Image 1 (spheres, rainbow, N blue to C red):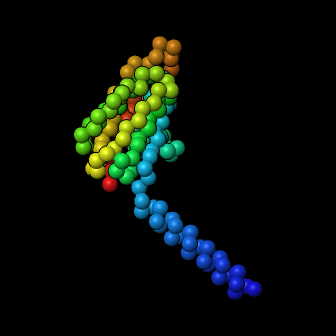
Image 2 (cartoon, helix red, strand yellow):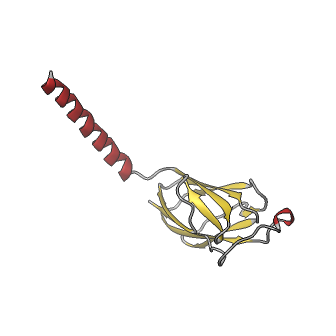
Image 3 (cartoon, rainbow, N blue to C red):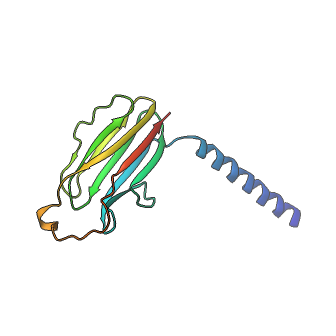
Length: 142
């Protein structure tokens, strides 16, 4: 009985390792970014629920979709700073809750930033400390 149970556990462990390795090698087909307000640095973004930071980096498959939602107290404009040519149909995230989607059809390394605007009038009393973060995103598409 002990040998049979050990064999089953070992088989399950090997299967989990192989599935993990296979999924780690493939790039996802979608990523979600969320911009939020924070006291230190003014704003930051998160990729797929990860920690909020000023700089983010992700790897996606060709044809993947990148979704961006603005929950900050100011508008943001998504800007491609370098990489394969890309049209961002509606780059302005001009109020809280606004979102946009970009499909990355060409392989390569895309570098994005946002151009923040002024705080919304109702949010003008929001306090921040330190220099405002410059949001940067690197997307490698294979």
